[in-house]
Structure formats: structure tokens, C-alpha cells
Image 1 (cartoon, rainbow, N blue to C red):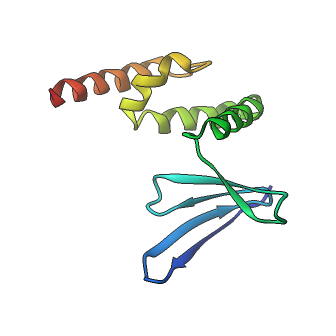
Image 2: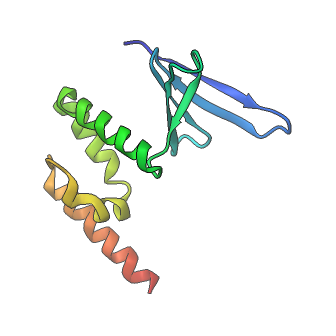
Length: 124
């Protein structure tokens, strides 16, 4: 599957640019390159983009179903990359690590969990 990567200018008033990674069925949009919004093509109205918001109950179910469908198809190398990327967000890892179906590098997970505990202790 091929993807197109490009930027769009946000005008009226000028608000900067948005990065876009697009395939035939879905696309990701980011203002800062770190936080991404997923969008999928909708059937009605014809050929428009619809957002999936993880915080909306119906959308959260769609996201979970999509990830359940996608997970077995991901090669180990991709899962390793995603796991390493997740470890950069120690507080989120500490919150959700019990929900991970498989942990490839337990030592990395433990480092992220210790980092999260230290951060939370420093906030007090």
C-alpha cells in the first residue's frame, strides 16, 4: 500500500501548516508531528473524511476493533518499533501496561514504569 506525505497551509487567519500522511482508505493529520488525528474515508456523504476520536464511546469501539484486526498482521519488527516508541511516554505506559497483550522487551517497560513513578513523585 502506498502513502502520500504532504503539508497543507491553514489559512484564514494563517495558522501554520498541517502534516498529512494519506493512503487510499485513511490518513493521519498532525500540527506538531507528535500528536496525530486519524481519519478514515466515509461512505456518506460521498468521499468525505471522518475523524475517529478515541474519547468518544462509539469511536473508541471502532478504534479497538481496528487495532484488534490489525495487530496479528503486524510483523515483529513493527511491534518492536511501536513498543519502543510507546516507552517515550512513560506516564501512559505506567497507566496501560497491564492491558498490553504481549511485551517484547520487558526491561524497557520496567525502565518506563520507574521513570513514570519518579515523575509522579516529583510532582508532589
